Image (cartoon, rainbow, N blue to C red):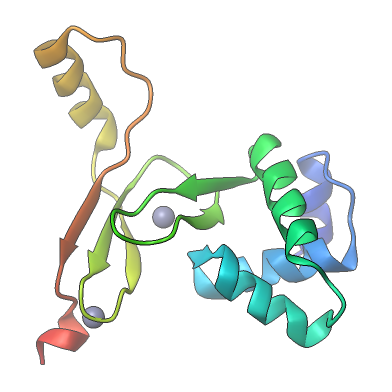
Length: 133
Ligand SMILES: [Zn+2]
Ligand SMILES: [Zn+2]
């Protein structure tokens, strides 16, 4: 995966920290700021949490990352992709994407509420297959 081109395509300046953030996100899927900060410190011991926040905010502004709000948990970040829903394991906290048809759910919600809706955050809580065994 060519992370440099990906960053440039989003008008983001390429820095070693940002390349590492992209790599961590590709490997983890979803990550909260604390875990991201911990992972980054392996390579960049002098990096501050404030800098990580600043980078993440910029990357969200450029529609490269999106913030996912998970009930009872810290927000996580992921690479921006097609609208999707999330399943969260209440035992191990694993978060996974599911390609639910969120658009039709939003349309149903519009019909039922008569609100002008444009964003949804659909999260299901339960037990993942690993924890079920
Ligand atoms: Zn689990
Ligand atoms: Zn996701």
